[in-house]
Image 1 (cartoon, helix red, strand yellow):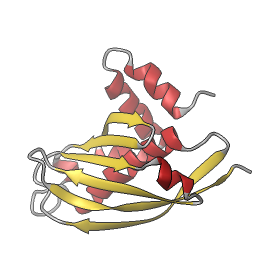
Image 2: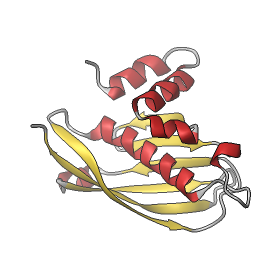
Image 3: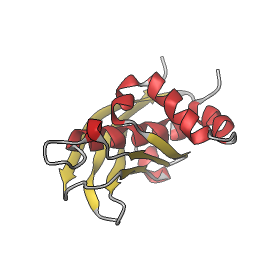
Length: 152
């Protein structure tokens, strides 16, 4: 079975490939579909998605709901983890710590990043995450902690 990263590379090489991969990714983890994520980048140490500002992701004041933003951050982290985790290991989210810094009044670009040093510290791997509006304002920042262990 091809890896998620292999599938990403194959599908995104086609016309409308990122849109198609986004749909496939949401099928694998259906709760991502609730935030209507659009995958924009998947590579070792980096994942990125967009959470669009639309009725289903808004809160009562008309901004992107904080939990929709966290959903996007977790989706970006999952892309990064799938692309970075060695094939003989598996990853599980252990916890998420976030700070809500500003209103999310546009689509959000959710990014997850690590370094080789982060992964060398396994089994506990911190993943830096942030959500940014169209004008560059960081609205959510935090860390998702992974537990990376051998496959059994």
